[in-house]
Length: 321
Image (cartoon, rainbow, N blue to C red; front, side, top):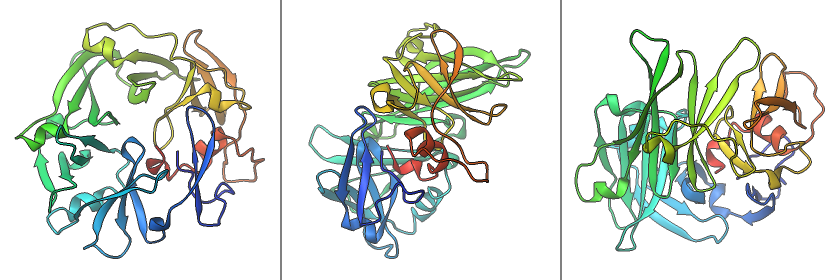
């Protein structure tokens, strides 16, 4: 996770800090490119960068830990609308994949435009593919070069929702037209419930939020089970912790949460009736407090914990994977 500037979490000396979500270790790296570039996204841990002023400059891929870079085609008038849409689009996805020929490809999907733009390090321009809006799905998650998107809709005549999960494989688009593939579908939950996707320990999870007048309930399903038609929630997620109501949904190892009062196998959520984040144990269905505080516009005691960081200064979270 790339820690954003502000709130005392940035050292202010030109060196950026990264937080390992698995181990809890901080790593510092000097990234000169970020003096005149900004982060579009961070597929699979690399940074996708665009020059702040020069639209003719190539889009760059940067490994923040090694400093290695690669160049993609510059944005041109034909794709400007798609890059511009990423600025305020909280539900776009990006992926990085490597073909059998060893050529790297980056794909970006602004779901609001039902479009995917993609290019390899050998291309001279970005390619654009569109699909019927009925394929449009949010939320989304990128994993191992593929993009997974979720769409939920109310069942006609019932109080339930139909959840569909699509898979997008950008590498197939190098060969010919390829559309989002429906890989799982189920009828689940109430009409007011919400759903999210998150990657956790090399698995895609579906997070089902069941709202109530006081505190919500969370059910967690493995995508692998849903593909097989098994609609059975899990009671353990390997001791990890899920953040689902921040700008970018995250899975964090409980080892990285020491000192936050978090025990693992939990969902951390800002409970409106309580005004502070709490943790929901998916095995027992119980709530408990966590360390950290959330600003309500007044003066608060800051802990600078990961929980505090997630809720108080994660507007930059789309560049933090």
